[in-house]
Image (cartoon, rainbow, N blue to C red):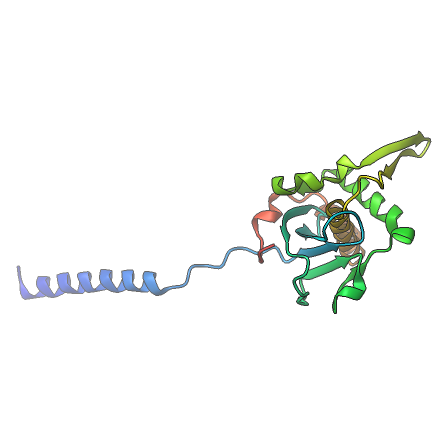
Length: 204
């Protein structure tokens, strides 16, 4: 092998080694993030049972909501730009986004739940099935305007309410998003695919 061939071979080996080193130290590309995802921190304490806190994520462009897990209710609220905090005990926390009052807002909350179910927007983690509002919500009457939902106050607990409040907060986020869109774009966003929850920018 000539000197030139040996030099070329060494250079080739060196180039391969440097390429592997560069590959090893180059950061992996960041996962794609849906900029319309909002975390929901829902806390309920004024109904039966122990206070309950559930975490959810919603895609404000489609209105879909995933209620993912339960966390400690007493943990302090940490304000964050991508998080909506909804609670029925606003005086307990130093920060919140939505405050729930049963006397004036229960109809609105029930309507949000009904709309989410009808549109197939709600996903509930198996660990939270015991708090599924379907277990305490019943159809009371049917009239020319359609079904009217009522709730069983005897069976309602803080877990049920926490999930209902998360759905309510999600619908408000979706409504705010649609209001800010041009008319021709709002209808397009309703037809997005189901993959938005595969692009979570935070842990819920």
